[in-house]
Image 1 (cartoon, rainbow, N blue to C red):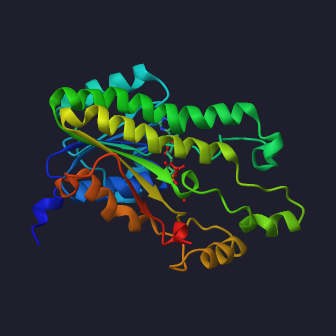
Image 2 (tube, rainbow, N blue to C red):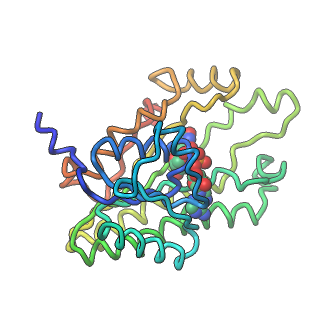
Length: 272
Ligand SMILES: NC(=O)c1ccc[n+]([C@@H]2O[C@H](COP(=O)([O-])OP(=O)(O)OC[C@H]3O[C@@H](n4cnc5c(N)ncnc54)[C@H](O)[C@@H]3O)[C@@H](O)[C@H]2O)c1
């Protein structure tokens, strides 16, 4: 096999939310493929990088920049930094997202009828507007340079409804627990934002795709895991590593004829 097909050697790639559970895994994978990675996250936490990678790569390989993806000026300043150190990015991974806003109250996971309006606004702001702004600024710069790949991280819950029966055991023990609506709506919005950007920028060499993921193991409780596993044809939750191949494929020349599309990696969740 010609491994150059999947090479990212020397390419500057921005990843938003790069200090999260999947973000750190994605960062590690991109570095291993030879990319230069710029993490855009709320706070610069080098300890998390050292723990995840085993060392702190030099600034020729990894930049960590404090960016709020909901603020255009913050994204523009960080892009200037990336260009100062390297050059215009060749890849953007829109990965930052909120499931529930930090510190959200009990109503957050309560019945749909009482889902708080401010939680809806915050989730849409980070998950949808954040992708719009980062794509506008960084995708725009890539279009000027005439090449690039945008990968926006979506979710099975942006394709199908959350299966609320997974949480029945919590309701039976007295908790009012429902997976909230805003996350699902925010992720499905990415599918058509992606198609828009793909057709808009196709003549200027920028591709845009979504990568739809299933749930990732993160020490969830046994009862949840049992129900989730039964719901997945492959019988398990994803490990963070399960998505590495798809991400490298979408950012590299291996996917050069793919744009406006959605790659689903979910253990078969959406197949039945
Ligand atoms: N973990 C899963 O089970 C799962 C399943 C499907 C899809 N996804 C998607 O994968 C992506 C990564 O998920 P994760 O589980 O690693 O999440 P995470 O919560 O571990 O990480 C999210 C990161 O985004 C950052 N972030 C939040 N708001 C931001 C802002 N305004 N500006 C900049 N950065 C901000 C956080 O600081 C954090 O580092 C998300 O898009 C998520 O929706 C995750």
